[in-house]
Length: 154
Image 1 (cartoon, rainbow, N blue to C red):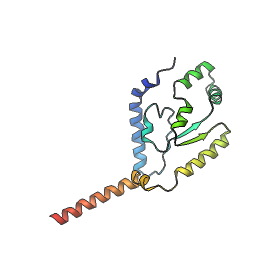
Image 2 (cartoon, rainbow, N blue to C red):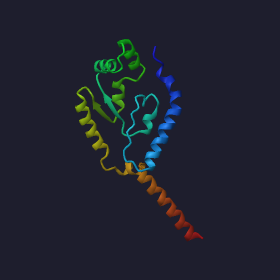
Image 3 (tube, one colour):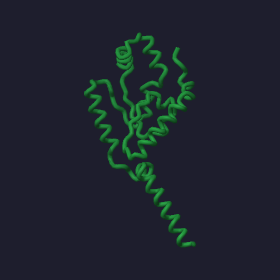
Image 4 (cartoon, rainbow, N blue to C red):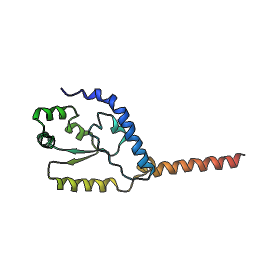
């Protein structure tokens, strides 16, 4: 029997902390796009920290067949593994971008390239202020404001 998805949340704390540390390191280095491949993103409640959320979706029959082929597993084992996660249809409904993976690997690579181009587009003002460059600009503005205020009032 697969574990209850809600019971997995406690196990994710050390894992999610490690992921956030790696993301922070990449952010400090100035990476503009960081791709996280997290099958249990929603179950671990990490969806609140990622934007945009991209879900690679496939119909249930294809998902089952591919999992059995990939892992050389029985149908029962594959179904248990699939049932231990939130359904792809539910994930799809919560995604910002959905990549349909019912086609070939080439189709998937082309669709991923399109999504990557979309994600790398110029930022809106809101996105900018939430980005590394926006945060650094805000910090610099505060420091300059404090120094200028000190000079005026001292």
